[in-house]
Length: 351
Image (tube, rainbow, N blue to C red; front, top):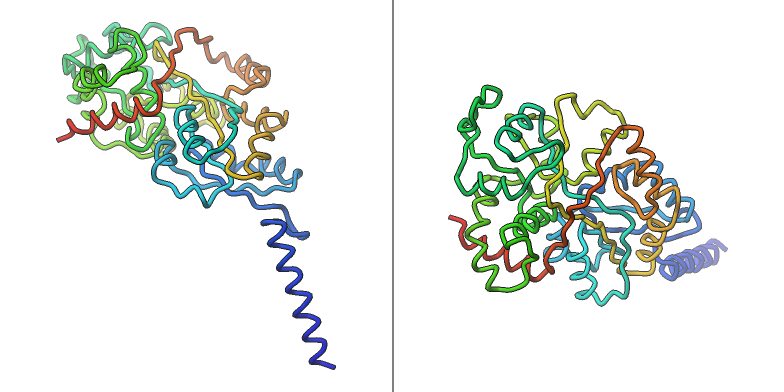
C-alpha cells in the first residue's frame, strides 16, 4: 500500500512540474516572475513597494538587473530577460532590430540636465555660461577649448580649484547619460546640426575629446555618479550631467537629499532621454503595456521625476515645487551607429 501511495505522489508531483513549465514562471501559489534589465536610474522606481503592488495585482512580480544603457545593447545576455529597458530610443531601436522585436514602449522620458551648486552657478554666470536656469553649451565649449580652470575665472573666491572647468559625466562607453551629453555637445560643435556622416565624426572627435576624456575616471552608471553628487558635494562633483528625473525625484519626495545650495539647470540645447522598453517575450509586452497605460503606474513614475505620457501627473507635482521650466531648445541624438562610431573614434585619442 505504501508503495502505491509513493507512486501516486510521484505522478502528482510530476503533473505539478509539467503545469509549472507550461505556465512559465507562474504557479497557483504566486505571481508570474518577469525579469528585465534596466538603466540604473530606474531601479528606485521598480523597487518601490507601491510599484510592485500594482504589478502584483496583475499577477506579476517584476525583478530587474541594472546595467549602463549602452552596455545593455552590447554586453548583456538578453536571452535571460523578458524585457530590456534602456534610457534612449537609439539604444532601444538597436535592441529591437537585433532581437527582431516587433514593438517598443516609451512610457516616460526625462530631459538631460546639470546638477550643480549655488557657488558654482554664480561662477558660471560670471563666465557667461549660465543665465537663470539655462546652461549655454556653446559658451561652455569655448571654456573647454581654452582649457580654462576654475581658479582662472575672475573674482573667484568661492571655488578656487585648480582643476579644469568640465561637466562630469558617466562613462561614454557604457552609459546613456554620457552618450546623450555627447549628442548635445556634438550637435553644437557641428554647427548646430545632428552628426550624420563619418566625415563629420572624423572632424569633430578631436574637438570633443577633451570634454569627455579630460574628466578622468567616470562611473559606469548614472545612479552611482548622482550618489556621489548628493553625498560628496562640489569638491568632488561641481557640476554633473544627470537625468532631470534623478534630481526631481528627491525634490518631489521632500526627503532632504537636495540641500538648499543645490541647483538644477538645463543645457541649451538639451536632449530628451526617452526611456524605451523593448519586450523580449509576451510577459515583457505586458510590462510595457502596463507602464504606458496604467494610471497608477504613470502617477508613480511622475513621483520619481519622470515626464509621462499623461502630462497631468508630472505637471501637478511640478506646480507644487515650482520646477521645472518649459523646455524649447531640444534636439535629437544621432542614430545609434553614428553615436557609437563617434564614441569609438574619441576612444582612439585616449592616452
